[in-house]
Image (cartoon, rainbow, N blue to C red; front, side, top):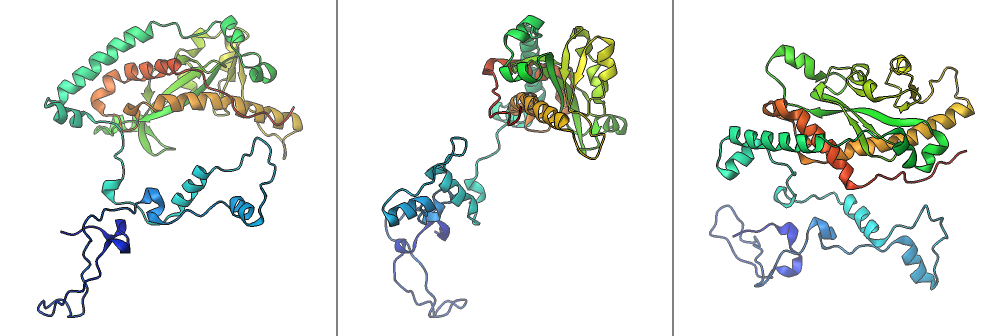
Amino acid sequence: MFVCSWHLSESDYTSSILALADVAKFTNQCRIKRLKIGSVPSRFQWNNWGLPIREFAYKRASTRLGHDVCPALPLEQPLPCEEEAMEEVAASVVMTEHDYGSAPKPGLQEKVLADMFQVSVSTVSHVVITWANYFYLLLGSLPIWMSKQQVKNTMPSKFVQYSPDVRVIIDCTEVRCQNPSSLTLQSEVFLSYKNMTTFKGLIGIAPCSAVTFVSSLFTGSISDRELTECGLLDVLEPGDGCMADKGFTIEKLLADHGATLIIPPFKMTAQFTKEDALKTQAIALLRILVERAIRRVKEYRIWEHTLPLTLSGTVNQLWTVCCVMTNFQGPLDLKGYIPFG
């Protein structure tokens, strides 16, 4: 029997040398390593292959000089703890673990589930579709769109200071789908700037980070402007502010409904004015919330893999359920501070 020498130290072997003159492919001076009785593997990537972890520089200097040499840093920049130092050392190790030592990616495909439960793939699809429709009816009946007063009562102070009229923060996102065999369908779902086939949808959140608007998923070739026309304009009221990035050319659409578009200003001269620079930083900071909300939705494992076309008929139900369920995870937080104003 043989074992990998990566995971064993020199003290785990015996010092005996076996003469192999009778074996043609070895010389009589060849040494075969044999393990001592009771030896077990002890060197792995997670423990730095058995090598000692070097102490942090401040700790070494403090020990050598006999007093604490750690400089007084502000609270925003704490010293790295020992665990962080170990992570940095582990990240710098060039040697990697074997294939069987790494954890498999989470998420189960339909065929894997079918083999596991010894049923057909169509049965798995029927079960998923049934439960998706049930949760869609259950959660879809919840009134997630917040009134103006609800938005005002739950608005964080930073929004009150920089964008008091904002009613919803919107952004588009994509989920990867299986490449259809039809060339016509391929052209519809193909997203050119990401070079993949996708479904695309629009998500809107209130300043308190609750998801308040979820559009249906459309083919990836749809524009941001077209997505905005699919339901969002119907719920906006005069005086509402809609925060987005510069890619949303929907100012006239919103103006026709009495709403305003809040986006970073475009640079018309060689350099931003001080006012435009401050406005750009403020909007960028506040828009982080919608990106974090989208990340929460995509943390559901069904979106970690390419969506099979067998689920295309129920993808909107699955997407809506995942978006609404993020509201039960608690509010997101605007960490940090605005370094201006």
